[in-house]
Length: 465
Image 1 (cartoon, rainbow, N blue to C red):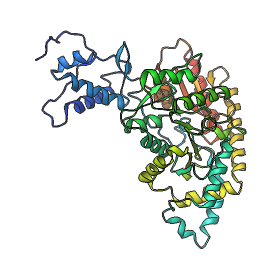
Image 2: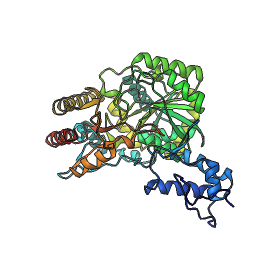
Image 3: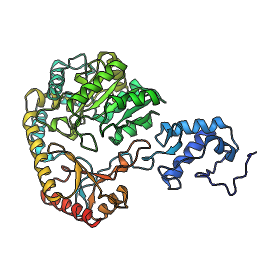
Image 4: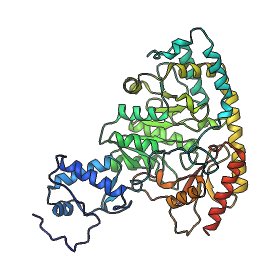
């Protein structure tokens, strides 16, 4: 029986638990907490009752509460802060996947990042050519597990564009970045492990980690930047086992990490001998990308070079540079998940890269992003934002002192026919939610609609003052 009476006792959460259910109590409690969050009975940032107090209230063993809280942390629902207690994570109720809306007169897509399909005529021309070849049917079979010389040559050239030297012993093909992230996490980490990233990050990382029972921890910032000190803090205080970073135009903040910081972080990685997953999704929007962190830590840097944003989303390919010590594990995991990417897509990529056609495509992509940034700067000149002329996204801040949440801004703009993404979708753990939204500059391919969308966003922001 409970020791205390809770009839008039102030508790932030009073779960209703069916003790006669066949589901183990700790799982049932974790499921109840998730449901209460999604249905709005528990809001992000809420401090939960102490575990002993909750065990007394429910009249169950303390270890059941501990197991339930641990499971919820692995699911990304809770965050424990030493000396302060356990809180509902800031992003617990946020939509993990970034859904895509078809651009129309009703909705202008400025949320998801969608490269202009008109630029992909070079890709489709090669595909049409391949279809006419007599042995085309072979590309409709499973791709061989071992890459051929031309595929290896293309993969090595691909990473050369990033400024990373690699070899046939270090490259792998995956079915897109999300497949790469999931495979790397599954290969190198175990349920209950923790990895660290920036306090706002790509939601796909969180989705993959949560599904594998891996907790994502936010890196603290020093002087408004991520440094080796940030990494050391989470290793010492959270026993973090690895890191995920986007040094080139971080998603969603658009920030570009300087070379000195990259070297500093690499030195720390080398010292601690921990894996770094480096996502280079936007790097090739720069004519001359900065050196990857992985180039300074060849033994521990795992670099993902997706083709979706710069070449073509429809290829569903990403290349992974994997150090020798991780290669067998990552390769085996990739195979167990999708066997191999489609042979047709790999062959198409191989031809485009080896024949140098990527240069023209990159040139057009970079030109488009620069033009879209000029329009943004002109129309939204009064807004506060981060990002630069090579960045396909703008992290735009709400006016100071405005009492409105980013998620409300997303909802309001959607009702006005504009799809953007709010900060809640990107925040990690129990980090403070930035008063910001992410705007994609290349999703709406119709220039007139893009300009109309920017004007509506600018008008909405001005109305908040």
